[in-house]
Length: 161
Length: 69
Image: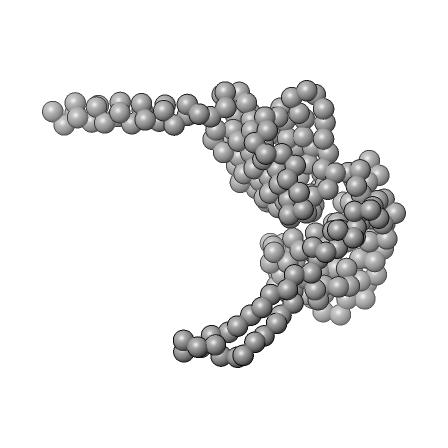
């Protein structure tokens, strides 16, 4: 009798699970929400692919990607939209979440399209960071300058591409 | 372990420095708007024994003393 009871519970649970997935986008679609402190770029928009730079490596996300949590490094997030258009946005830092219903949330601290970046301003920031690094007095200041250096290098690289 | 974490910085610190550098690398027309986000002001009232310990204490956040970047 307990065996039959277990079977019933399992079927009910399965049916409940099926009901939960009913509102998700079609199995092979990916809804992207990409927002930064300064602007919302995408709000649950279905896109084809997203490439992100993270501390655990740069990776591309397609629908049905394994659920993932990752921390973003300074770099370019490339979004391939449904109409084939490619959108490149530079992100200073943030997080990315891939859920099991294929929705993706990219939350950035500060993000700007590559067109908004000024190459010469970026070079200036790079040389400033370089001099800060060389003149750093203690460990903390050196680490801060190293971060600024790393970010500035990435921006120059992105702006030059 | 990251170099910055070993030096005592947190990811929040990292994030703020990275954001500052990015804001300074923008084109002129976007920069004014972006630089407003650099500063944030926090009013802190420390409490002890169920009452404010100090009268009023304005503190500009960590962000502002990273002015050199």
